[in-house]
Length: 299
Image 1 (cartoon, rainbow, N blue to C red):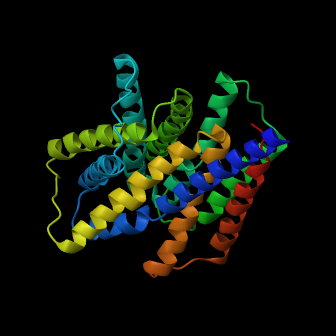
Image 2 (image 1 turned 45 degrees about the vertical axis):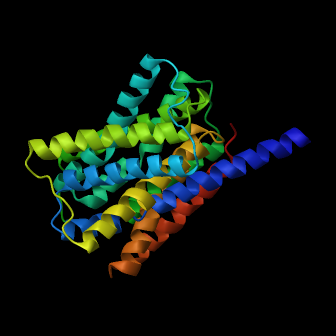
């Protein structure tokens, strides 16, 4: 009985951490929009996002008097983790923003947030995980809800945009799946977050310099938006996801992360004076239903 209670407590902790991570990620659209209004380029904005997040991780580790580099393990493992995490995590937003230019944000969002399907395929192909009715129902509800959330866009379907959106979702699925593997290796979540942010910031710094689009915040408004984007919407959510995924399955973590577009839509309505149609309202409820159903998925 004690083991069952411990397992339930672990599952609840993981669910709450991953859910909170998805909710904080949902503010990405608002703060990203504010920085674009400050004449930031996309790649420059992404650089500052991950650079500030990296500084946040180092500052919190210093405040906790925690040496995140104490037990680095094998150098080959560290380098592999850095390259895979940074490439997959940075590739997701880069491909998403590029896909949005071809297909519009709505279509790109639907395709990208279907990444739990890729995570499911990875789990089915590489582990002993088996699909059950709760996981299948949750995946169906998530995809249906995302289609309803899309709304009406003026962009026609574009093969290049669709390919980039699929690549974006695939990249994030690789990140989620590899994060679960890293958690089993007992790699500290602070170190994992640092590696993700360091690698991603380096990638976007190189891209923004190569394209001559690098920007520096030039007003206190821009610095507030940049720091909030880096700390509240990036550094903290990454660490929450990495901590939470230690306690729940790949599938549950990926589906709970899909709460992000729901929060993005609600934040847009509340803070950006955007409108929400009745169809999108139904989409919100369907996505939430999917998040509830996945709670019955077994490890």
